[in-house]
Length: 149
Image (tube, rainbow, N blue to C red):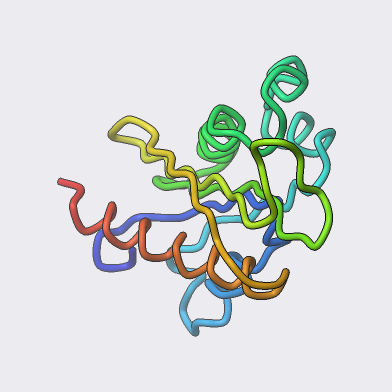
């Protein structure tokens, strides 16, 4: 991010700020980490990121559409060039038909391209799901930033 002069915003639900915390653990991250939104509740997703409550009601908070809207909202409400968003079911409860524990949607929005989204189906307990989500978010972000013009 620093080498490309790019800045990052995060929009997190199931990880509760772990991605932002991992970023700010690095000395000098203020050069490229712009801000983090922890939007654990549906109201927070709406108020802080502009996610349409009708969208959440229609498809659920753990969905491709909401993950995309979260990433795009974080990008629009920050000075960042990139935004990564995650929403999911870390467990042990919260599973619904078609969305078992470990279901996570990850979205990545950039200022110069279409928003990408990916469904993850992760195993393990709550801690494992959250840690794997953070790792996958960084993998996708690094790949996208390196591939960008």
